Image 1 (cartoon, rainbow, N blue to C red):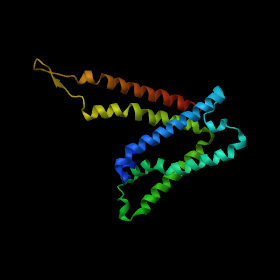
Image 2: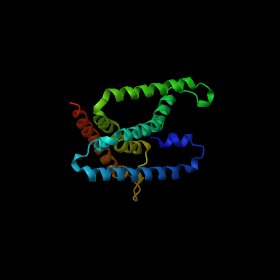
Image 3: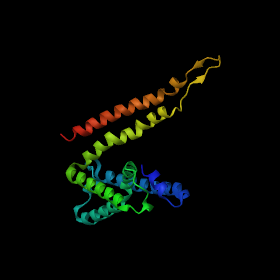
Image 4: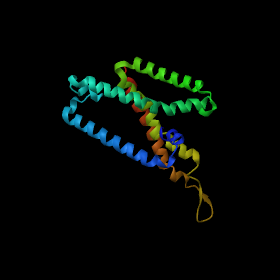
Length: 198
């Protein structure tokens, strides 16, 4: 969701591929190292928020670093959502000089995120599970097959005998299977995530 808005905002668009590969490779290596070391150290006692496993003596420094990362990462994370909202309201481009509308929308998005985080409190892991079940699973497993079917990539072909016989059904069997699996996964993951709030 962030790649396209970032690409559209880049001055040197040809640098995108190398930038994405470098950033994702670095993030993957760091996360695997941190997660692996913590799971190796704490085993089954590893908590959902991994910082909770660390010794409490150095937690202030770790918490400050975590806050610093969140502060610098938040504008990047909210950028796609802000673009979608601004385009929905058909706001003019930034060079028009009417920045106060965009600033107002982005301020409201920040306050909305702040309200959700305050209300969720200690149930943040359950909230993330609900968001993953309701939105991330369909994004990965439901929308791509739907877009494929809607785009008409699988079309009827002519048979060698001259009659029209549709390979559309044969080609779309895996697509429909993925779509059904996605709907089922969405229902199951959302149900278990919502039931955790009880």
